[in-house]
Amino acid sequence: MFDDEVDEVFEEVCLEMSRRYELKFLEIDVDRDYVHFLAQSVPMYSVTKAVRTLTSITTREVFRRCPKVKRYLWGGEFWSGGYFAATVGKHGEEEMIGRYVKNEGSQYKKLHSDHRLGLF
Image 1 (spheres, rainbow, N blue to C red):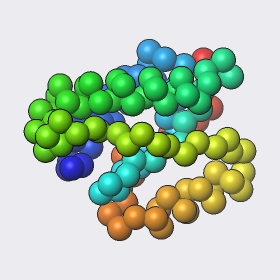
Image 2: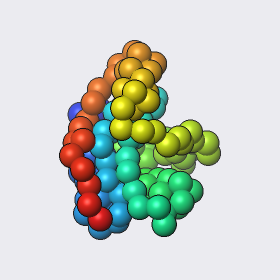
Image 3: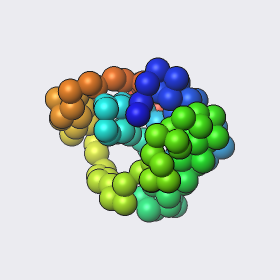
Image 4: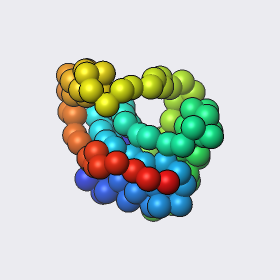
């Protein structure tokens, strides 16, 4: 479902979100069937709130800007019901997760990377 056009829209939507919400995307990676985020946020945002914000806005905007995705899914859902979230430190764990994500899929593509310190 992810092609170059959808990748571009997806990245744009995420970066627009980071300007409006206290959510900074350090990395956005896509594979054929998966999306992986490495993000930072303020302690007041629960993981559930961050995920809910991310999924609702990206779904709405990708469907609006790329109607072919909605037709492709035939009323299906853009996101699955589950997700995995974990906290990571700056060293070691972040690099380990990055290697895992890169090696997990077959068509891994990094859409965005910005590891500069984010101040909210």
